[in-house]
Length: 282
Image 1 (tube, rainbow, N blue to C red):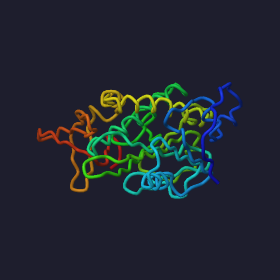
Image 2: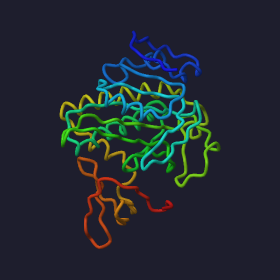
Image 3: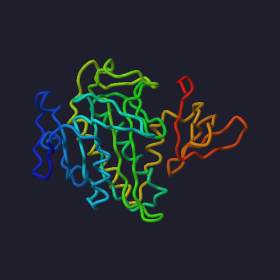
Image 4: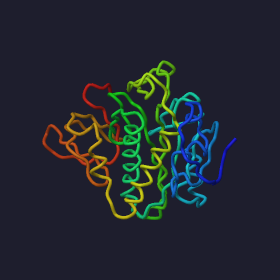
């Protein structure tokens, strides 16, 4: 069952935790008045994948800003086809459609906007300091709090759309997860109390919308994104389809590529790959 459409936003007056944790249009708009992101939305109790739905909408010509949100995904996925585990009611699981005036090579800037908005929203709502692990993870105290998956469509070098899917462990019982390589994290586990998901999502949308509007006006999210990266200054092993590159993560460039100084002294520019920080398991 989905909930679609527009309406008149309601002023936020607080309210019980149960109301703030209900993922409805009204609960979100109670604390956020959209101009673009979430102005149109589809909300599902259960769906196979919000990314799959958002990509289908993009390919049918849907307007940018549409939000696909689910309380549970039966086929949620991350990068490289990995499954995303999130019991019903535990997490924020959503996808947003963007149509920025960018080249395909610049599409990572949209993901930068979403990552920065996520860590800023977490800080505003919970007071916790999350970080970004290149290229697409959200970390909290070294554990994986969330992840993003970006899917693109283009005409030649020009970007037609960028669809960004995100999963965040909000009120997740970590004991409910299967064994994973990267230790998981959850906002409620860190705080010792539940976090209102609708308020967190609304705060994310407000911040992402402001950053995205700035991006379309010519602003680069590079420096803001760079400031939140946990990867820089650490020894890393980056797995790519061709090889594993080891060295010091020195910097990132304007388009999101990771710059790694190898032990031989060469500087490698990596556009995509799986990063293991020193001390983590490969």
